[in-house]
Length: 169
Image 1 (spheres, rainbow, N blue to C red):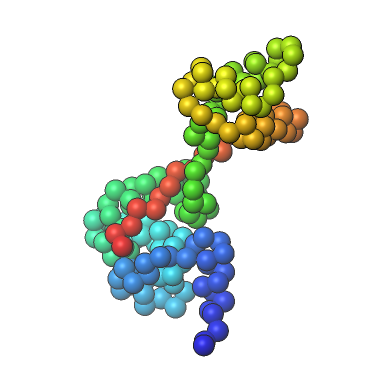
Image 2: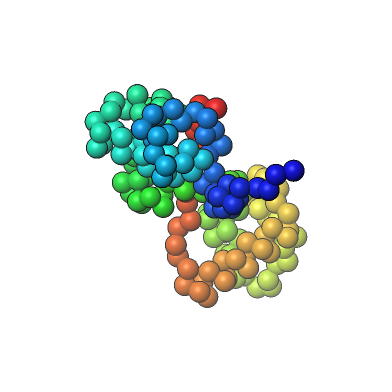
């Protein structure tokens, strides 16, 4: 069995491994010894550069780099807003709470200020009664702990990411 390519390992670890390098057909890109179709950040950057600097049409560049036109515009906007680091795909999975949203947690915190302090089970029952969905008591405990930690640290940053993962493959 052959040893794994260290560049592929590094790209995979940084979530920058292009899942469809075979879709990159741009002749200039493939002819360059520096350019690597396995590096999704490089592919995205070169696609935008090809349109803006080399004046290739959006449709032609998107097709040559394995994307659709709509995704080209999303990538270009991300590049403009955040630079090359914005081209690195984010972590997969949910980006925030689905049930215990800011509004729900604000209400839960109001309930915890009442005397006597209700337990997590009682809070889960109140959430179901008021908001119409069930939530595990342990989820409430963890969410309250995260909010306390954030308040203590003064952490008010918004955590969001816009996915740019639409591919032709």
